[in-house]
Amino acid sequence: MENELKRYGAILWHWIWLIVLGTVLGAGVAFVSSRLTTPVYAASTTLLINEAPSSGKTTDYASILTSERLARTYSEMMTKRPVMEEVKKALGLDVAPDALARRVSVNLVRDTQLVILQVENEDPELARNLADTIPVEFARQNSALQANRYADSKANLTKEIDTLKDQITTKQNEINALGTEKTPAKDAELSRLNSELTQLRQSSAFLLQSYENIRLAEAQSTSNIVVVEEAQTPAIPVRPRTLQNTLLGTVVGLLLSMGIIFLIEYLDDRVRTPEQIDKILKLPVVGLIARMTNGAAKGQAGLIAVREPRSPIVEAFRSLRTNIQFAGVDQPIRTLLVSSAGPSEGKSTVAANLAVVMAQAGLKVALIDCDLRRPTVHKKFEMTNRAGLTDVMLQDPGQWSSVLQPTGVNNLSVVMSGSLPPNPSELLGSKRMKQFLEHLHKSCDMVIIDAPPLLPVTDALVLAPMTDGVVLVIDYGGTRIGEALQGKTQLDQSGARLLGVVMNKIPTGRRGYSYYYYYYNRDYYNDGDGSGNRRRLRRGSSSAKPGAAAPLADSTGASLEPSNK
Image 1 (tube, rainbow, N blue to C red):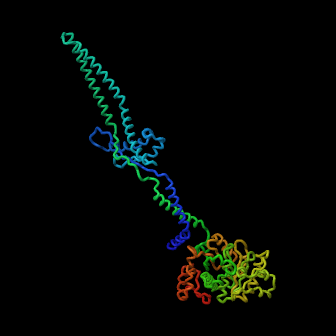
Image 2: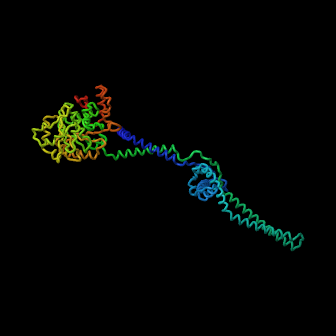
Image 3: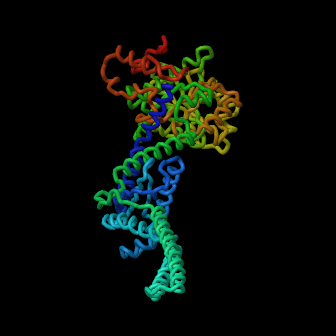
């Protein structure tokens, strides 16, 4: 778990520039868009919905439910087109009712009869006017709507009451016309008129009572809307919230950049860690070589083992030398082939510097440039390539001793490629080539072969069975897993003895060379404390892969001993 966290931390640190860039861009886009957005203000009015009084004296669950439904009903009705049209006319607005309704929201306050009406607008004064006008217009329309329900009944009753009043007046006039003189006929007529008048008055009283009952029902069925808190002119906009949007943009930019990073890492199939080599190729890492500077890749400067013998990178080559010697404890390695899966992975640089450090350790070393297609060894030693391996193939064995050319490094000779032949694979796989290697063993302790890449051509595959061991060079972050696996498979099929992998061009910053971090602490090599150097070297090598032992050697490589001794 700890190693996984460290690996993720190394990945994030490697991509820290993208994380910072994504975070800054997210925050910047959110901030700029918020600043360019027109501010929106919100004004709110609190209303009390008074339910019409009930005829009963008790409040049960049904009445409570009715009250809640009434509040919800009013909340919906306040945003409908009739109300918006009246508000538009009252305020003289030039806006569609539907667009005006989208600016209005009505929310119920739970377990109360309160309703909060909120209006949003770019103009704070207009937002306040809308919040105050909408309840007024809605209350007026609601009252008119309730009044229309009883208008016809009230009109009919009023008409009948007026008719009865006229009849009562007529009867009263007829009674007054009989005078005060009493006769049996007048008495009978007067009794009849008084009886009819009484009936008319009773009918009128009944109609008046019905009219009052209708008015009472109208009053009881109309709910009141009371403004509890009027709207105030807002001073602070509700949108956009610049600070909140900027923080949210920062988080989104951070998460998005991290997501991109892990997606890139997931899709990246290039070799970046020794763990990948151990897990996929199932090979030990016998060397970890840091990336050299651009100046170190040209000419003699490419031989950093000659130019800077105390360099930490040279210590890595000495570690590679020791690991190869350990691999040949049971079966000595006298012929070593250095190759890579593809071109430009640094195999020639590894072979040349390895040959130098082996020669510095007292071994007689011969370096052969067997890359008969793109030879580079002569460039690294700044020598001419007039005569070499191809010329040897045409000579008698008695003349082969002259092909070894001194390099200026004690105990190190080189065999250049010579002129480029038309059939490199046939030439390298010939019996004459095998005889030449045996001839070199008579005068050399170690023969190192710089072979062409494995995948483009078959030259290295025909040479591999003739050697005692093969080292596969992998470019950190350049070699793809599939290429390395295919190269390893081809070597296995050819019957080669694959010693391990050299991870080359490892960057010294951020992620990459944490396995041998001590190689790049130059103060360590210049402090002059030999005992302290050994302690730090032993501690640093403990983090290497199994099989990649680090040497305990001085700067000249005179003393070699395993780190676990």
